[in-house]
Length: 256
Length: 179
Image 1: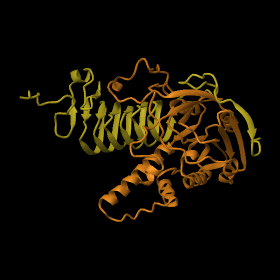
Image 2: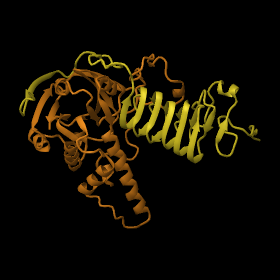
Image 3: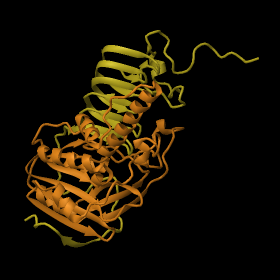
């Protein structure tokens, strides 16, 4: 069995973030939004992902995150989730320069690519020289991702992606993010207190509300971090604050 | 026996290079169908169709539709560029409007507007006045919105409406307070 299957990620498994066809108004624009009732012409006949379930949750973590960024002016934000229009609009309207990089999608693509290399080597009956240890894989993944100059961001939206990455990759990502953040920079992360049953993605609705979107599984949950482990992971940060919700989701802020 | 179709298939350019220049009448005609069944372009007067690979630089002021592979540079000062669902573009793009339904690897400057459709995948920075991102689109890069409008810090987020809260936050623990 391949390591990809061991992780529960078969080639072709899951359908990514999918789409629920809602297209909000343009960022910075005044045009009329497209809605479900008037889909884009080009969507006719296109394969559509199943409708995704959405719900809203009050987020004290987000509120605190924004409070910490208040008065920053034109800050730089790194969003490591999917590029949602609402989230980008929210921060751009507040003067942020936003960079977007969907790390979980990149991780899945990376695993599929690695699987392909191994299969190719097996097909040629040749011995591959790919180091498949978790440490080597983490290093290879980060050679192609999170490539920004040091101290280039004031804030990072990490969401709950650490729960879905291999522990060594998570550790390395946190270390890299610490370098990417300016002193005083803030990370907003989420951790599941128990293994999540489904797969969710999040987008900002307003300054106190997140929209939780149930999505097809992109990556299965890897581990549940305990409080002490979270503190160790973010040991280089001077401040940590957490909010635990009734839905077993811990929202955490880390200030460098 | 099988009835032979006319030699020319819809949406396929007439010349070998894969770039066809349509007549003004054609440009105003309804959307044509590509081999995938998706409309190719309703207005584009030039088309680089699926299966065609080109390296180089494209300049002009008309609309362009790319559903093949293109590598180089695209500069459509007053036109719009549509990258079709099968399109793969490795280029810095400068145009009045850019619509991405395929893959783009490079910086995109859409003077008036950039649209990323749900099948769109962009690795590169975006610079525009207006940006539309459909759910499912993939973006890896920085977004710069150029607008003369003042920033409304208290504006409500658009798109999604706030409903009833499900995950009420009940307690604060661990670590020192942020203040």
